[in-house]
Image: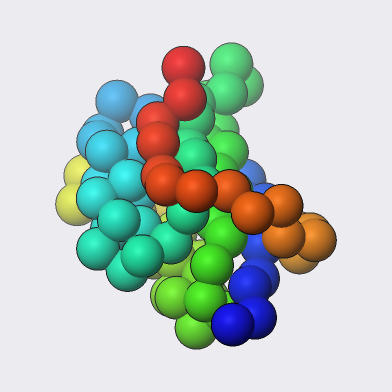
Length: 91
């Protein structure tokens, strides 16, 4: 199975609106590995790794985010897969 990995930075009103928890739950539902965390500058950073279609779906999700989020920009950088297993919120 081929794997894809992307590193994502999401800007807007994305902290304090359940963005990380919703991202984790959505990634787990889709079988995507990686992590998500808040940054000090107000953005959310995430890594998604797994089936290419599922990873692309997670990138699409980032443009919407959680119900209370208001996303302004999403930056996506493709990287080499590292074999991450599971999905977690990092602090």
